[in-house]
Amino acid sequence: MLDLKLIRDDPDAVRAGLERKRAMLDRKNVDLVVYNDVSVSGIGFDAPDNEVTLVSAAGERVVPRAPKAAIAAEIVDEVERLLGALARGEG
Figure (cartoon, rainbow, N blue to C red):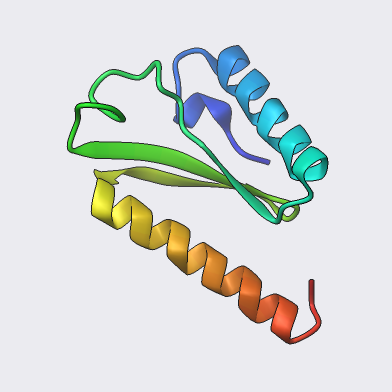
């Protein structure tokens, strides 16, 4: 289980955001969604860095604060991993 205290001062808000993203997996019938807490200063819009949580049926994985290009690479890596699992019949 993801330790919400590690990623935000308001774990209840993060928990609610992650619950919305988990519901989105089923509602949209997708394998991966990205949770981006836009309330955090210094990341997201008008900032060079970001920090996200990748949400899939297998669980959540925090991608810690990094330049946006590195965040994008982590997202693409996760998509490649999921596609590889599907190709092997694991998904």
